[in-house]
View 1 (cartoon, helix red, strand yellow):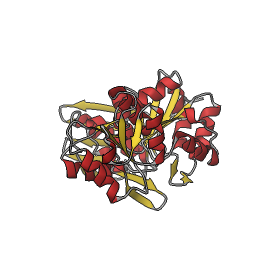
View 2 (cartoon, rainbow, N blue to C red):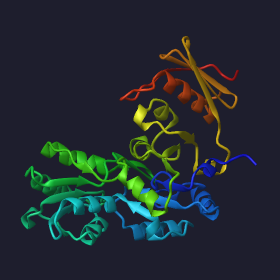
View 3 (cartoon, helix red, strand yellow):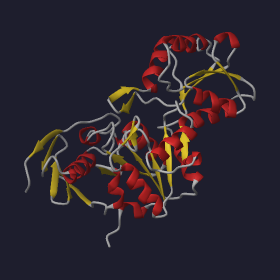
View 4 (cartoon, rainbow, N blue to C red):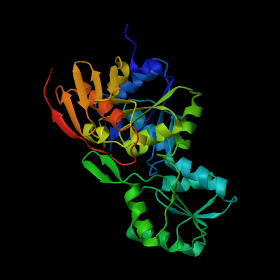
Amino acid sequence: MAERLLDRFDAVLSDLDGVVYAGDHAVAGAPATLARVVADGVPVVYVTNNASRSVGAVARHLTDLGLPASPEAVVSSAQAGAELLAQRLSAGTAVLVTGAAALEEVVAGAGLRPVRTQAQAPRAVVQGLDPELRWADLAEASYVLADPDVLWIATNTDLTIPKERGMAPGNGALVAAVATATGRTPEVAGKPEAPIFRTAARRVGSTRPVVVGDRLDTDVLGGNRAGFTTVAVLTGVDTRESILAARTAERPDHVVATLEALLAPCPEVAAESSADGHRAACGTARAETDGAVLRVHGDPDDLDAWRAACAAWWAAHPQTDEPRRPELVWTGSR
């Protein structure tokens, strides 16, 4: 029996939004796949940048979708933010919470005093996503942050969040509004920083985890920074085209259409470079580039063709700090 992609790892660190669900609804096939992963003896830890809900609420949502999960199976950016605050501040310090009640709860649980106004003399601001956040809340954070000695922690800086009706503004868009008003930049507690992933791996004693996510700038970047294998899944934000153009730090080790690929054999990609260019093959697809034009011999609907394209293009541009899109030419199967 061929080795499955899953068989290479001892834990799955999975994103939620865009991977397991979009809003209230499950991504097709995701609950059944992850239930099978757990049944096969591989623990799953859900690593989420969504700080608007408690880990208990997230666990209940997963259970409702057919994935029985305890709060211990969820690591949130709200928890990461509260832990970072507790490391930097004395017990009982007032912290302005610009976010949901779930964020306020974990701040209090970390031994700090959550407040909502500048009049309560906060010495830090923690900002997380809250669908009910108002302009007045962002303004209050801006007023507090006018003091350069006030610590500013953002749970995450995702610019968008996938919902059942499409893409919506994420916490990063709201953080950007405060940054524009104050001229300041926050410290980020959650993804794409490595500690949240390392915390998740330690929770289940994993030494060979795989990070699965739909975003290059959070899931893949953070997993790469943690030194873990990364898998980009095409059910959320990033696309075949954006992955092909990815900067070096955000390139995944594997690209899959859905989570079900974890239970299938891993497609092998062969690449070679020479003085006259770079070539790669995956399945029946082939790709070659001189560093400017990328020619792909295959079907644009075949993910193997994109895997070959990524391997050839990335070999031609091993180090790039900015997204780099090739002139892409499809020549059909050959």
